[in-house]
Image 1 (cartoon, each protein chain N blue to C red):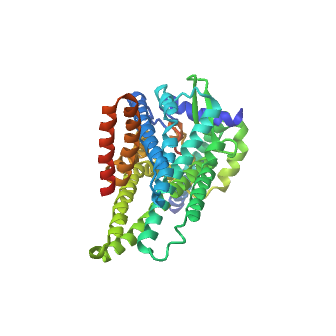
Image 2 (image 1 turned 45 degrees about the vertical axis):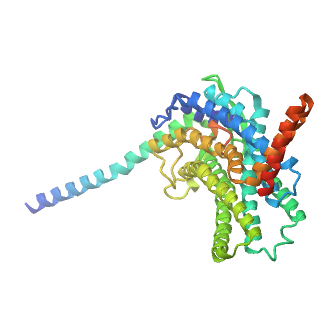
Length: 362
Length: 77
């Protein structure tokens, strides 16, 4: 009972919107309806878009590039990342009441964290692969072998599963008898002696997840692209046809990285400021903390948006991907047309020929 | 005349000393009140809290309870 009482005490302050220092932490009422709508939109777009990417990469008949395998895994991570959003939409719509039980609280939180890490690690490996292909194109053959790629993918998922373990351990449901609501949140009462000790745990985990899940990977990607930029600039006027293809793929991956940074930076900045305020290294005034609490759900939405933007980036920038996708869709249409009538078949064959011609040009 | 002046000076000095010592005493009383309130609110955690306080670095303040970001979704930790 005692470990729960401290948590309940904290939650009571949240429920009433005030704590013992007189701060008002009331939620902005429109958030209870706006955030769930955004979650569901992201869910629909992310599920459909990433599903198409996975299908295209899996069914592609042409030889898969190393980048395609990473992009496929990135799409898998993004799809799994958004798949639990309906639960969180309901949670928010009910005023942060979790009706799905302890198991789903833990599992859905864990899945989100695993795939958050997996997404950023896939992007990092994509960047490193491009670095090897462009900067060390003559000597990177062994490093870019199939075995190495499979090993790196294994490491990505293993490391992601490992780094997300704290959420599996500490996420739980806590009942608040005063408001008849149950929250799904981190509970450190099993490992902490007092409030100060708990603050250290919160700050430590929060800062470490931002460092490992955003800052360090982003720095690694930046370094890779600096070297790539220098190399491309040096040899810009002597690009061969094969190098032009590499450069086109480079644009796609660069765009993915820029969009990633745009979507995730606000989330990690807010989270880190919150963590630092627990250590008295950032402002902890009422107004500042209230701002963090109000802005956090929207920063989270922006982070989730990244997961459903990636498929559209492929569709717009990667001609090869678009061609493959059209071929697959056209094959299905051709099969359907053949079963219905000869004229439809003829039309489908014509379209297929056009698509093949387009593929050849690409 | 000199005896009177000397007596007055001594009285003034003693008064000043008494007024100066009143501040720390008031602070001490306030601290005791806080401890009593804390004891009433969380009697079972009193000893660990005191032990923790005695070992805290200078300037370390007790955390104000507040809502956590983890209430609002699957991220962050």
